[in-house]
Amino acid sequence: MTSAVQSQTQSQGQSQGQSQATPAIELRGISKAFGPVQANKDISIRVMPGTIHGIIGENGAGKSTLMSILYGFYHADSGEILIDGRPTRIPDSQAAIRAGIGMVFQHFKLVENFTVLENVVLGAEDSGLLRPSLARARSELRRLAQDYELEVDPDAVIEEIGVGFQQRVEILKALYRKADILILDEPTGVLTPPEADHLFRILRNLREQGKTIILITHKLREIMEITDTVSVMRRGEMTATVRTADTSPAQLAELMVGRKVLLQVDKAPAHPGAPVLEVENLRVTDAKGVERLKGVSLAVRAGEILGIAGVAGNGQSELLQVLGGTMRATGAVRLNGRPLDLSGREDARDRRAAGIGHVPEDRQTQGLILDFAAWENVALGYHDREAYTNGPMMDQAAMKADTADKMQRFDVRPPNPLLAAKNFSGGNQQKIVVAREIESGPALLLIGQPTRGVDIGAIEFIHKQIVALRDQGKAILLVSVELDEILSLSDRIAVMFDGRIMGERLAGQTDAGELGLLMAGITEGAR
Picture 1: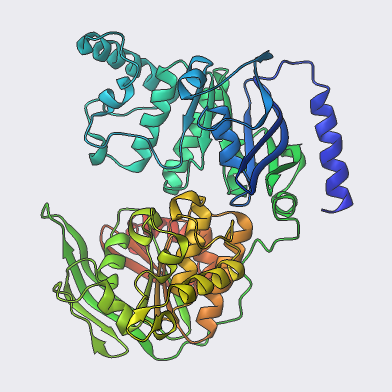
Picture 2: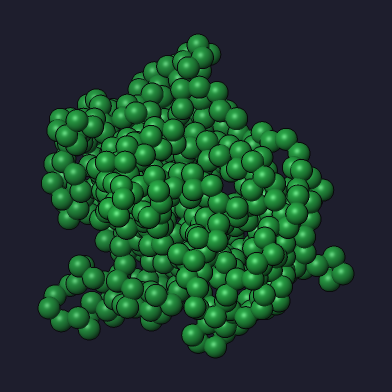
């Protein structure tokens, strides 16, 4: 850490410590270990009432563990929690709710075949009679929607609404339970830019109504835009607390990682070769008869990154699934001139054998088996490779050694091949998937949302690995809802809207404004 940053954070921490207001939340000396791993070490933090307080740090820094202690999911090994100046024991989530704390998790805790109304009431029923509880909840939801811009159909079934609306339901659940303190863990990780903007309006409304908000995020842009104060964690310790107005993204990145971080992708110009992937008139119709891909045609050449921009739900996911061998389609797809079967006779294993690596958009349901150990997930799909076999048998020792090597090089924390995938943070889960697919040496890499829920240091690392693969002459098809990521990482950009390619641009000859219009379905001739 630079001396300038140190002096700044120390002076700001002292000025905050001298504040006369009673903190809404104060944590004193919180420590928590999981076996040999010290997740939190003597952490103290003060969150003032009616503010938005950001907490940032790398994956595995201990942010979520700290908030899980505050919400009663974990018990601290030592330390004290004060709510509104009063020492408060929080043995479980029900105690946290009684103390006025609500939490919105990165992965939502909703019953998918229940309605919005039923999810809000679940666990907060007035009595054994459900009808009065539902009636009261319906009236309260109407009021909350008006007060906080949290409009959502109370009779909609969760599995039939988008993730942005599902997140609103989680916030409504907390507010319905009278939460004055709201914790949001990576709230924009699954949101489109417009949904994220709406969430920020909601958070500002909540702050204006006197609510206290703790925002856990990896995204420095969000910290700068929405928070009043930000605390930085690194390797289980609290390294700084600063007023957001008095810092910068570069300083925060340095505090998070312990070194200067390159916030822009550093890459040389591409030198594209022959086409590796050729897609012509690709069409997909889903089980409900809705056409999701409507004649998509594109090409990706050796030694280039083609970025696919677009608001989620416009066909990008279906494109990746077809190319990855998990969805049927009509049209033509060729890999290095060889036709790929789109009828369903070929699957993901055949795609891997043909030279296609795939980092799926949803690491937890498509990229990993969460109950399997890290080494099993690294070998997943590649277990029959020569390096992993000893004659006719799988060589588990070789798999574990290879996983340990990948974990070291990709900075997976903790670097334990025996740990189940479900016990890693979301960002470290992503690194496991990225390491497996990039290290397989594919001719074509399909990569969906490569840095979703990943910290700034890991984003820099993953971007470098993608560029290095491009520089080895590999073809890369990148799908991301992060427009900044598309612009900085891609050599060419194709924009999808409503299942169609609206246009292609060279990355160096376009900007967010032009791409945003294409993402909305507005072409130059339609303006």
